[in-house]
Length: 178
Image (tube, rainbow, N blue to C red):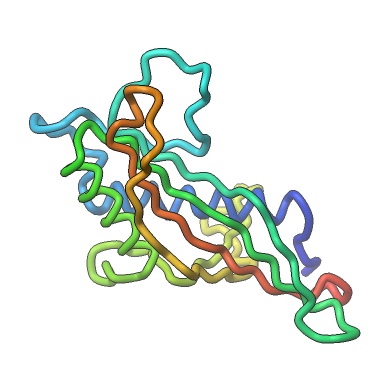
């Protein structure tokens, strides 16, 4: 099998990370309607500064900034570290803390009996093919997982903003195709 590299590789990592977060929200009951809160939605993009009327309880899954380091002198084995974020824009502080901590613990693999696909490692599947069972391509690791309350708030939807930030570590040999 040919090694997946470049933009297709990070796109597959992002799509699989989105699926992992979406599945965790589903399995933990966050996507079910509740009379005690507004509906929770999960999206692959950050809220744009130009969006009007942003509803609460949005979970955004994004990957930004890559650093690369050669693992072995003279080889193509390279470690890529991506900064990844699960932003929770909640309707209040209590709900935001609860949802963000659920996302953090899911990424850490703490919901082993409740969430079927959690961290701290993630299989990356080929989602570009229409197989009944997607083909597993490679694994990435989650490291330095932390949950924080954002102190930046210039728009009403940011008043109860919490951030789960972490590194996605992807090590592969870019020369040999393995």
